[in-house]
Image 1 (cartoon, rainbow, N blue to C red):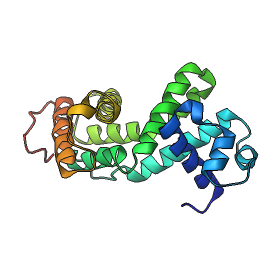
Image 2 (image 1 turned 135 degrees about the vertical axis):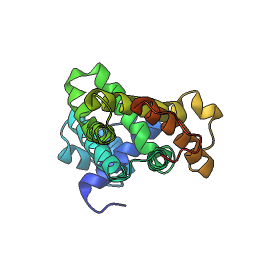
Image 3 (image 1 turned 180 degrees about the vertical axis):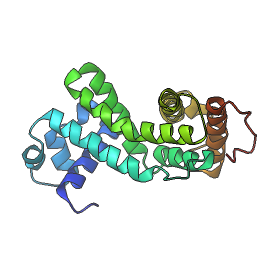
Length: 195
């Protein structure tokens, strides 16, 4: 378990969000999950908004650590998505819970800026391969990949796709991502998913 209070509290909140949804996220529940004295979470995050913003910041920091640096191939992206569906499943579920909460509470819309890093990385990757309008294409690429993740984690795709955390899942994701990347680059997809 992380040794700093911010990480301990936000990791406990992430697990609560994944298991119980937004209704399960209370200061008292975070204290209990983190095995800390009652009032600890409130001392660090005075309001529910502050707690949610801290959770999103923690999720974004952990997600950034997972993103490949300079090796944005279909298999590398597939490995990240597979991790987000298996080892980091709670984090991914918590991310979606926070995003949905922001649709109902405009004061939380600032949490959306934490998606900027993946969009910037996608734009740079597409610019490097000569895609016209990499700004727009990068945003669309992230939306497509996020949709794939959502479908595989909690959508209908969860019923038919290979189990998360398996080589079969990573290979299947790589094929899907290869197809998406080739659609954006204007080249024909190859069945081996090696690009």
